[in-house]
Amino acid sequence: MPSFKGEYEHSVDNKGRVAFPAKLRKALSPDAQERFTILRGIEPCLYLYPNDEWELVENKLSEINSFSRQGRKVKRQFLRYAEDLSLDKQNRIPIPSHLAEYAGIDGTAIFIGSGERIEVWSPQKLEEEDALLSADAYEDLFENVMGGSDAEGD
Amino acid sequence: MPSFKGEYEHSVDNKGRVAFPAKLRKALSPDAQERFTILRGIEPCLYLYPNDEWELVENKLSEINSFSRQGRKVKRQFLRYAEDLSLDKQNRIPIPSHLAEYAGIDGTAIFIGSGERIEVWSPQKLEEEDALLSADAYEDLFENVMGGSDAEGD
DNA sequence: ATTAAATTCCCCACTATTCCCCACTTTCCC
DNA sequence: GGGAAAGTGGGGAATAGTGGGGAATTTAAT
Image 1: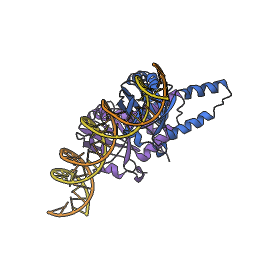
Image 2 (image 1 turned 60 degrees about the vertical axis):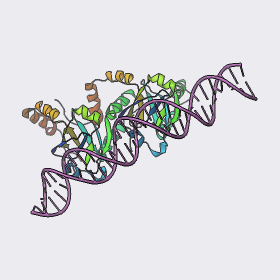
Image 3 (image 1 turned 90 degrees about the horizontal axis):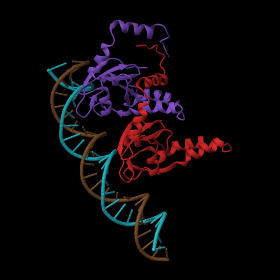
Image 4 (image 1 turned 180 degrees about the vertical axis):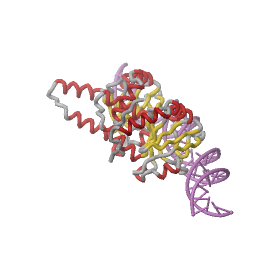
């Protein structure tokens, strides 16, 4: 199971296109067919899921009961800011303008491999996010998440 | 299993026609034959089901017991304001005037892909609906559905 | 029954956006 | 150093979105 890792900075041209980092592309499963779903993150960034991983997300969504108001709300809010896209012949992705605006991306985008998905940040927003997390706080978080419970799967 | 996603705003002309978003059209199953059923939503919006998905809804309706007063009431109210429609040669749908009125749609319509169904909103009504859901509440919903086992706490 | 009015639908036309392809520069690797 | 791959930019074709005219069908009225 290949997973995405590393940080890559690329320029966004005036058509909203960014080169998809070669190292991340090589980590793509053939099942993904170089197709993705991109959506708003909880943080001020974008989540980029390769097709095969997105299917797992959709499976979770499909379990939601659409005949309840709460269920509809979750689906609506989740899917609302999501779009499909795929690589062009130059291995770039077009970032939908409304998503670029949400994430404050303009001119430069930073890809962060994050396991089963990829995060796309604007340099400024990423810096701000970093500023909120001191080294000590990170260590605490790390222990919190990795330490106590069974963080191993499969 | 492709599902509808994304938000698209289009203008409604004075004949009640709206362009059906191209990205949603590409997500249509060939079984749907570019035919739909449109009806009043529970929320102040319209539900748009492609033909193939509508059949599943009808199956569910057929399970309702028509020999109970409640059953009859549900069926009646559900089907009462439903209509069939299909795309014209320019890939537009005509919104029946009584449904447009119900949803407050006039001049502009917003399509929201929501899995197996598409919702059609007026900008105003959608804004009102959004106001009911704070960012925090959404984050809770999000974690709920996407269900990490993280011991998150920041 | 015939005409008038209204609605539907089909077609055409214009504009904006997206997508596809080509070209150039830089970096990486042998 | 040379070749291949990666990253960047732009021009042109195709598609999407929008609006409107007019024929055909339906509804209503005389």
